Each structure stands twice: as structure tokens, then as C-alpha cells.
Image 1: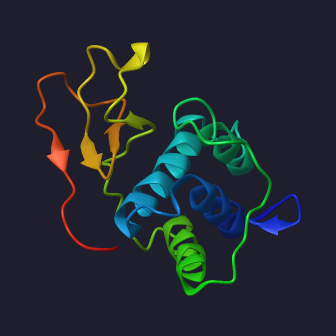
Image 2: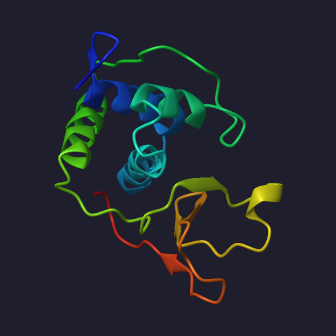
Length: 143
């Protein structure tokens, strides 16, 4: 799929790169799945580009931007990872999360909710997670 003349995988990679270029690959993967899960929850009402722009909002304290690319091997890996996520070739380490915040923050929407995963500096939340479910911490090297 194309997003404003840019393949969806590149739009997703650009958003994640601008948010989390210095994070682990696992954290980048988790943020990609967050965007994909948000699109799924919206039943396709929101475009992936709009969702990615939303990720750059107050939840993550990152500046808004346009397609951000880089010629580095690390960025090319993020683009390939985005393609694999969109094709469903990589398992979702967030367990279906569509909300997240940095673990040092406590936004009002998260009060009373149990996170599904802690990956890098982010806590992830899925809509169907029961309040007494244990937190799953993603462990491992890069994805």
C-alpha cells in the first residue's frame, strides 16, 4: 500500500526512526506493532500515516515531522523490519497493544490499566488485558 506517494513500510519506518532511532530493535519493533494495532482497532478508519503522525504526539514527546530517511544500514534494517511487520512475518511482542507511554510517565488514561509488556522505556497496553494479568517483559536482543 502507498501512503501519499510513499510505500506504507517506509512511512512506518520513518515514523519509528524519528521516535526511536536510538532504541533497541526490539523497542522499534514494538512501536511498529503499536501503530499496526492502532490501525486494526480503528477498523481501518485511520490511515497508517495518520496513526504514525499520532505516535509523534504528546505520548512520546517527539517533534512532528515528514518522511524521515537515512542512508545508514540501521535505517535500512528498520525499513525491512517495517515490511515484515506489515506482512505479518514477525510476532507482535506487545501482545496486541494499541496504547503505550514511557515508563517514567503516568498519563491519566493508563490509571487502573495493566500493561501487557515493558519493552525498552515503554509500557504497552492492549484493550482486552484483564486488570489482574501479569506484566510480560520482552527480553532478548534485537528482533
